[in-house]
Length: 326
Image 1 (cartoon, rainbow, N blue to C red):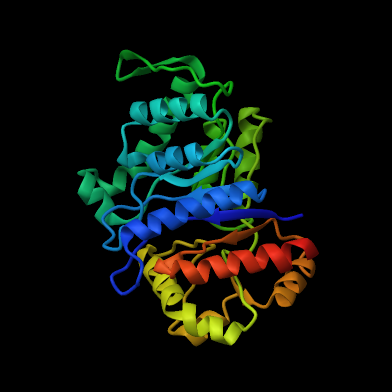
Image 2: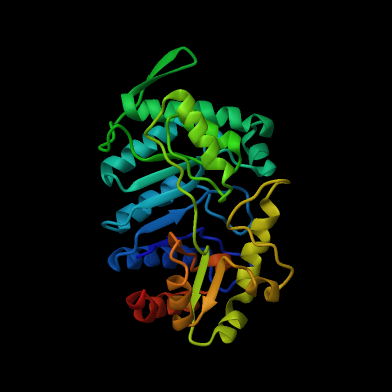
């Protein structure tokens, strides 16, 4: 059985009918629904200064989600660590792990949007150096309970329940990021499926004598929507999905490659994207069963401010007619 993941970014663009409050309420309700229906993972990311309200506080909303659910793990993919104080992040992770042991997993990324670094007063060119140093601080603080920062010893409490520390990943999309992950003795969650990344990770790990790591490749559609009438569904969801994909594509920097990115000039172009699945229950079942290498079906039910009513119809149809036949 493939993993079922549900992403929420809490975006509420001005043209969409749902308010910010409605998007938050429905997104949290969907995570609760996924929890009670045995889904495998809830996912949240981080961006700042986006005028549609893209969620900027991933640990805060993960805490709310963990409190609203009983068993589903929350995956922060990714937390932009150079924008934060690593000691405060270590404390937040420790608190959440004590409240919901083993249910929080975090990917740390360098970030790439220049605007976000300008907001934080941090030099964009320094982000990867800051990332590596900060991940080391978070890891050591969680593992040891204290860490030396700039010559001073900082005590971090509480001690997390998960030992030696809650699950941490290093993000990125280039071989240098893979080598960084190995140097930090942590697994890697890359932003693409470039085969150079696991090769670089393995080579660096071998050089260091590190044998406990791995690279978790993203594999599977990044948007799934189930409808009895796909053409009608496209007419309903097209503008929201086009907004979602076009704005995300505009964030990317030159030379950057991210699996979720879709480059399309219009809705007809979206229909051809291999990582956007919109289809009947029978069609979705056939696509999954014809692709045994798929690791996960990644749902983003409120993408681009998609109206909650339409999102719920898709989720319920998936649960009723797709999932039993996978």
